[in-house]
Amino acid sequence: MLEKLMITAPAKVNLSLRITGRRDDGYHELESLVAFASCGDTLELAKASATRLTVVGSSVVSADETNLIIRALRSLEAHTGKPLVTDIRLHKNLPVAGGLGGGSADAAAVLNGLTRLFELDVSEVQCAGLARALGADVPACLAPGPGWMTGTGTDIARLDSLPAADIILVNPRIALPTNTVFAALNCHTKPPAQPSPQPDVGEFEDLCDFVTGRGNDLTTPAIEAVPEIAACLVSLLDSGAACVGMSGSGASCFGLARVGDGQEVARAYRKKRENDWCVASRLIGAGDAEITQLYQ
Image (cartoon, rainbow, N blue to C red):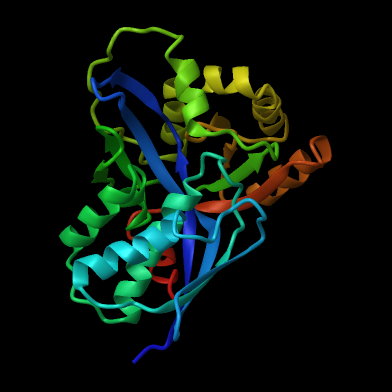
């Protein structure tokens, strides 16, 4: 029987993001090609005599009951009717409010990790329901892998393939709250878009063409709030990335490169913007062995 567990919460990257409409309740409908990078936050879970969350690497992430990690634990306790007393240590490696789904990925990792640690009888459907109640991005993070996201972000169609690629993630070290960007988006009126078919991106060139052609509808309002985002995108291209984009609502950006070229792109980028957060990683593909290595 396990007494402790270490789990990685991979960075979620919106390789494309299209806003297709706004519902009466204020939520936006969207379409997004979602992928995950092999880097992310790390969580240590251990059975204990008292539940506690410790955050390492960030002074702005709360460690109280408002944190999605604790909320995920409480939701599992309520669902199973069992006390899940756990000492949780979060190593915060991803930028906070950076558009990489860090908080959502952490919550999903806790749902998965506690289910395994305490050998809970929770089905995938039940876990997905708990994830959906925690936040729109959490369901996608339950099974890190490429997907086509629709609805408000809670509807995920898994993709069978994604070409192997390195991904360079950067952030100007400026937090950008999602509500700030969406509030600015409302000033950019556009007619509702028609639903799109799932993308066919089996080859690296196809993926780059799709990323460049589809783009991210939140880029313009995000740049209005944080102009440094534009400089990040230009610097990634100048550093050798094959294609670039902004993830989520920003301010994190990404560049894609062929396998083996990512570190060189990252080195060139750091010379241009030495104060930025910059990590070279790789995309997690469908059925990737990387997924099975998230738990240690």
